Amino acid sequence: MKAAVLNQIPGELVIEDISVDKPGPGEVLVQTVNAGLCHSDLHFMDGQWSRLPLPAVMGHESAGIVQAVGPDVTYVKPGDHVITCLSIFCGNCEHCLTGHPNRCQNSDATSRAKGSAPRLSRGDTPVGQFARLGGFAEEMLVHQNGVVKIRPDMPLDAAALIGCGVTTGVGAVFKTAKIEPGSTVCVVGAGGIGLSAIQGARIAGAGRVIAVDMTPAKLETAQVCGATDVINAAEVDDVVNAVRELTGGGVDYSFEAIGRKETVEQVWKMARMGGTAVVIGMMPFGQKIEITGYEIFMLEKTLKGSMMGSNAFRVDMPRYCDMYLDGRLKLDEMISGRIPLEQINDGYELMRQGVSNRTVIEFGK
Ligand SMILES: NC(=O)c1ccc[n+]([C@@H]2O[C@H](COP(=O)([O-])OP(=O)(O)OC[C@H]3O[C@@H](n4cnc5c(N)ncnc54)[C@H](O)[C@@H]3O)[C@@H](O)[C@H]2O)c1
Ligand SMILES: [Zn+2]
Ligand SMILES: [Zn+2]
Picture 1 (cartoon, rainbow, N blue to C red):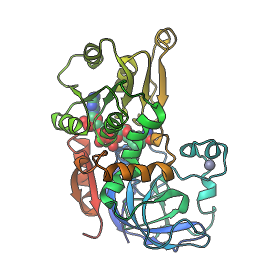
Picture 2 (picture 1 turned 180 degrees about the vertical axis):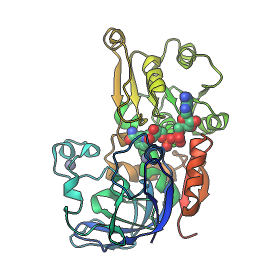
Picture 3 (picture 1 turned 135 degrees about the vertical axis):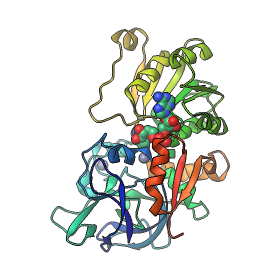
Picture 4 (picture 1 turned 60 degrees about the horizontal axis):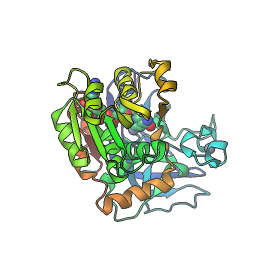
């Protein structure tokens, strides 16, 4: 099968012919129909994160159709439509059993045993799967606890976006921050994740939703998604002051959806007294941030991280599909381009330049 492989860091993706094994116990073989381009892969490709065994098939935001299942798989059957999610849960650990399956660290329980045949290979060389999914491939061989069954009338391009970006952004608002109706929100960075957070804020009933980005076209899409106010960070001297002026002192909830020290410190500062700043963006590995002790205790502010929107994806993703189909989640509006797998590096180049919202790969076209 064809797959986009990362062979070195930093490096571009190479389209290669890869062999995929038959599904083993607990495994599912999925025919990939669509995959979204998320910035997290790009952080690895550009060398900001390097802890990744190579070669690896990249991609972690995909949807498709179950082709075959291994022994002991009862959750899905061939023909079922599924979204994959990197929050593969064991179901037995403390995190899974206390309602936080996105924090599961027990990857041994959902991976092949060390020394057994690899899921993917290129000749004699085992090939890894980014996030244990490898979504930029015609087929994905994954553990059944990394898929969720969805209703068959859900279009698979929009479903792919739910696989990471939507679940991360909407979930950061619904599940990590748990915002109250009427509260004020600012989202810094209006890419796939930020636009999803903006939509989450609108659906959750935020009183005011401020979007910050550097590209006018992104800010227009942000308004379609529910932003009530927009700030072009390239045109104001100080983003924090601009948000404080708009809100009379700061927002109740702020979200960083870029992955930069400067913008994380901005969302921290723009949260008002008693407010919460949520970090979604993936800063370069080892990056430290600076906040003052005064603000965290005298102003009773909270700084939180959000991993994959604090999801329980088997419950959350079907709900997000319903919200798309009843018109509340605007996912078609977030798709800025559709490309074949062969053009994946071009898709990522548009993301580097900050001009795409979500680019979606169409397999088999
Ligand atoms: N926490 C998680 O579980 C999780 C999950 C998925 C992605 N992420 C991370 O979220 C971040 C966003 O991902 P994405 O796919 O939406 O990326 P993206 O590239 O589509 O969006 C980033 C946006 O930030 C804007 N931007 C860049 N610098 C800016 C600045 N200084 N001020 C204002 N805007 C600026 C860009 O114009 C762009 O619109 C990435 O770091 C990604 O790795 C985290
Ligand atoms: Zn992602
Ligand atoms: Zn677990």
